Image 1 (tube, rainbow over the protein chains, first blue to last red):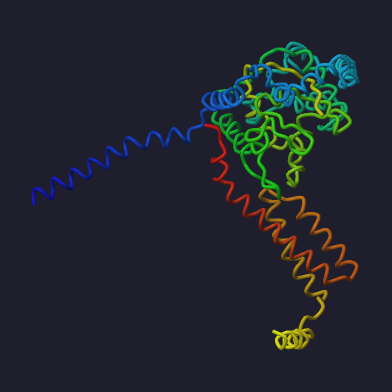
Image 2 (image 1 turned 90 degrees about the vertical axis):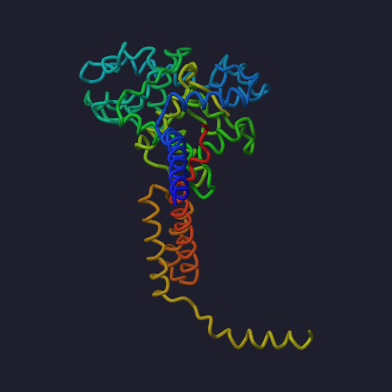
Length: 287
Length: 101
């Protein structure tokens, strides 16, 4: 009887020890940890492409292919986004009907601040992107909002990105469970397969950067938003971050969400945060 | 082998009258089922472009009175919508397997 009791107690103790040892790992795996996620994300790309300079990842496909890089560097002497840049600069300085300007809506007059967007607005409890902030600025000053995908919005964000070139991405996640949830939602969106093609963002930009998809070379996910907005030859024009997400969805045969949907705002937050420390290179040019 | 061929042809012919043309009621039932599945996928924020276009093709054929084509397209749209629902459901957990850790 004593032996049976001892055996039972021994088994229980062993089970308790095993539970105690394994349970913290389960909790750790489910805990939202943006710092660890960003470190793992960056390390993945740094190890996968050891010959690419870290700051070069923001140049997308050009960081993956030497021939393309040389062509792009030559093209940068007369960059295709130059018209949008000039238009954006002029628009930015032109007062609204009430006499105020965009500079009145942003810290530091809107100059050199691109690296801080998107941010988490603790009052609203949601992510605010630069595009959203620009349209909110317009509406607060009695102006109609612009389309989120191209033209004026692309010009304005091109100018604001240009004034921030070289500054390291600096996205903050406040100590707020809603901010952590937004980051986690963005991460989930990034890795979730969708569309008839059954592709996630990661299928192309994590699993296959540097590979060709038809005539294009896929960009790495790391720093992919640092170059936005972009002039894209395929579009024959400029496009914003919203346009990039919408197009990616369509290409996988998924019906895109509305620009600035919560999911898009969250995935922008996630992708920008994991690129912290990498320089802003927008506006960019892509094939 | 030579005997079985005429026999098969005879059998096929004898069953042929059973394959009737689709009616408007068939189309409406197939379309309603497809539309319902499509709405469920849209509510899950996981609609496929091909579901939308195939459903539109079914409606166009139905409006034009081509119910055979309309029923075929509606059934295809329903299958696509159901596949997108399955995808959205399974991806609720499956996305984690792709995550960089």
